[in-house]
Image (cartoon, rainbow, N blue to C red; front, side):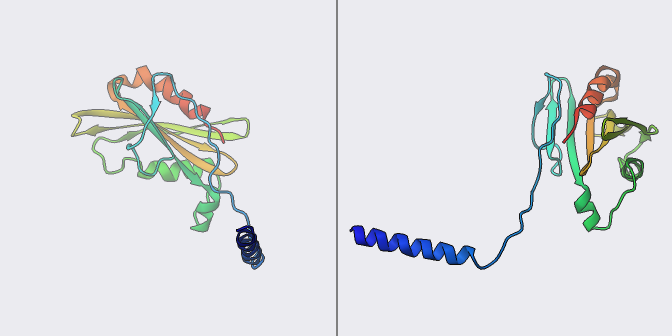
Length: 175
């Protein structure tokens, strides 16, 4: 029995050695840590946006949001090279809610905090299904490796109540 175990161990070692010795491998990092802070009344969720890397909500307060990452390296692979956060934000804003009735967009405001660039603008539109206007705080965060779209929304009547919290979420993001 000991001889069988020894032979099987020898075969396993030889097989593993020959497999790993054929080709050198290049290591890639996939994904990274993203930090964001939410108000205590919000919680992480799923099902709001299938492209989002992070989603949050509070259905009782009628507030929702999500974050989408656009990795700069991956954008470059498809020839989408942006010279600045301004250019990225303008490209995003021109299509944001473009097919919605009564769409309004404010002019973007830009800030730099440390090494991170931020842009934010207000948007709203009339939603026929909800029979009311929906308010969005749309933000862009530019870090060394990525652009993040931070989208938070509620009913227009709750804009003044939640906009400051939406901004806190936006400006808390870093990687």
